[in-house]
Image (tube, rainbow, N blue to C red; front, side, top):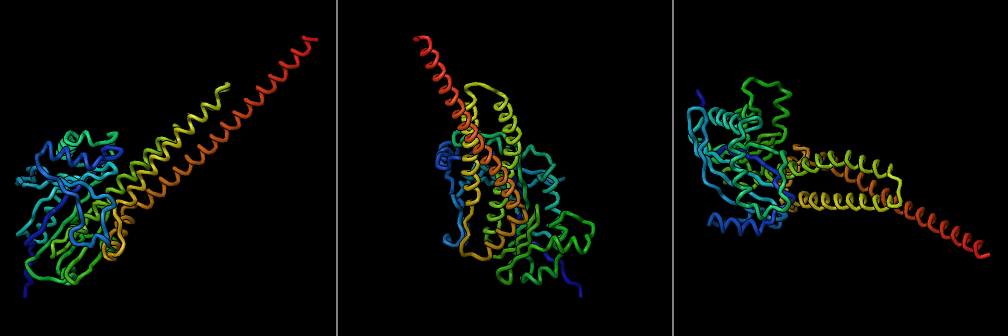
Length: 373
């Protein structure tokens, strides 16, 4: 007997693009600006089903809905919903959501590939650029020290709420091949590659399933729970911000070494002041980066929800957020050690200056004494 191919009765393809737009965002002001200019209310994002005491945003981002846009996918023009979130640590996420229904499983995967080619890495960025420009203009007054960073992150989620048949997670994995959807590859992959792609799989109930990869995820959630997608968005936002500060410190370290070398070559009575100024500058940099990285680390607080905690921890590990964060910490430690050494050198220079002044005063006293006699 032929088994009828599964159809996606209700689902969506969600494409995310994340940008670092500022040192931080004044969220209350952003809410006020949106009410004033869009004449519409914003909301503070929250997880839809999780107990706030079990898992919650550290500082809930501001969420607004923009007008729908048209997206050309080959010969078809699709209408796409646009949702924007602004995080207090300076990140903006744009989510484009294309509803998908009445599609076979293969057609659902092919639709995801078409959207990836249209909106993913290396694709035409005009749509993202236009939306980002609109956000920068609308919320300009809420952006604290706006940045023109070119660092971006993107992610895609294939979400299904209902199939043409009621399935358990085990049945689903037997009936459909998730690998083409997660990899974007239509050629058969090796057994090792397939195993690696499916390694990060999670289920809480018998009829839900989440599978994570580096740049794509599949979510089967009959209860229309969006918490997993929100958790993945936060993990990507944390990766983006850590990458930004990693690159910032990469650029700062050579500059720091050049400034120290020039200061050390300068022999003058004011060398101690130069050392002190440079040390104060490095201290301010460390304080700034530390403050923002702490905000990033606390973007999502998970305490009691074991299922979401596992997904969140796995996503952070998969996206290499701890690795990038450790690199930022190492570079901050180098700068801390450097400004400590500079303060010591400044103190030594001041002590040497004082000794020189004392020797000169003693010499003057001796000369005056000789002249009087």
